Image 1 (spheres, rainbow, N blue to C red):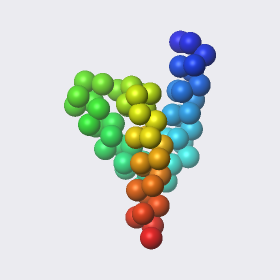
Image 2: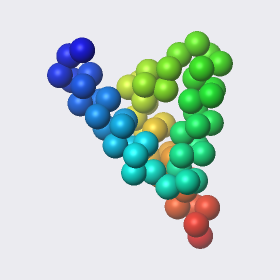
Image 3: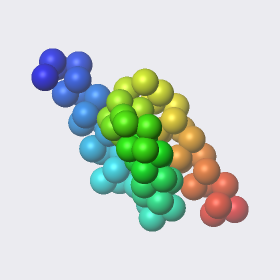
Image 4: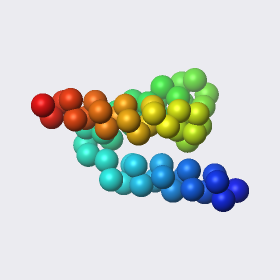
Length: 65
């Protein structure tokens, strides 16, 4: 694993570990969809950080309002 890949994986780990229950549900949905497509959540995260970071966090904030 390259240092860049390790940094991305660390960010993904941190995202999951620090997520609220609502955010974890969104992560779980994305993970299921990526598995059905034959890809991993890591691949989805690498290919679209907005998908993992901003979308989940934003939807979670919207649910709290």
